[in-house]
Length: 385
Image (cartoon, rainbow, N blue to C red; front, top):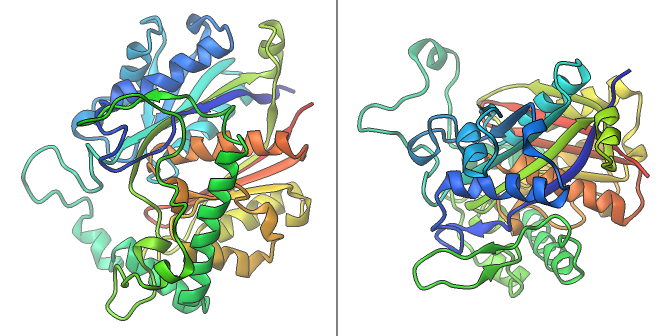
């Protein structure tokens, strides 16, 4: 049976909105991890069967199939195709699923999967030209009354009895863990230092830009509700608007061995789930349940969990359902501290997951994240010696 493996994973540091990566055109930003993967692994890019990239806002500078454009910008031969995936915040994770599934099916041997988002240059909700720009038709809106994701986060906090203090404590711990991981060099193997581009900027960005080392419970508690008057979700307990790109080198184990490359992890199982789009952000719960059922595993069998911190209430609702060892969940912080360049985050999480499994000599890693429209992907990988 064919085994799909991860040979390498690399990402840019995550930049703040308007920060050190703001001057990068998204295509050129997306090209950096592609170029790094072939250089780090002494790989002839001509052997790549496909480049599959996630991108949430496929308009303006991110339009016209950014995966193909990024591959060409990275210097790949023009014989290497590319395609762009949109599963909202899970776009890069879905790209990784498609890559692994192609390998498992025997249709491809080498696929680069990843994602990019320049939220500075292509904001959420951007359109190419003036007009109504409404992505939901009357038939859809007859069924569902959609609200802002921040309001969904508020509703999750209400339903799962997550307090404002719970969320502030969670956010503070995200920043503390991300700062510790940075200082201890835990991200060093996955981060590609990149030239800072922006007005008045020079030098190289080597670490995630959003980590706030000086935050405190007092500062977080002083923030006003961001989405609902009298609510409990603030900017401090929400993921940061960010820029970044990441890529994962996926192969069949046989092809990796032929090329003299060491597989670092194998794909065990993956699922996609969906539920109510009006609350939108809770599908990691059924996705995780489905994955555990498919594999016959318990959450205690998982050594590291990476669940995207879209909002603190999302992760806390998930933890209320599964009661995990919190030291195994986002041990190096998450999107509240690091940032959430939406189309990139699925590959960023995978890079962090693989490296953390290696650091602690763990066996199994789970990745899951909520996605617009009430969806979620979940992926289970196994570290290989």
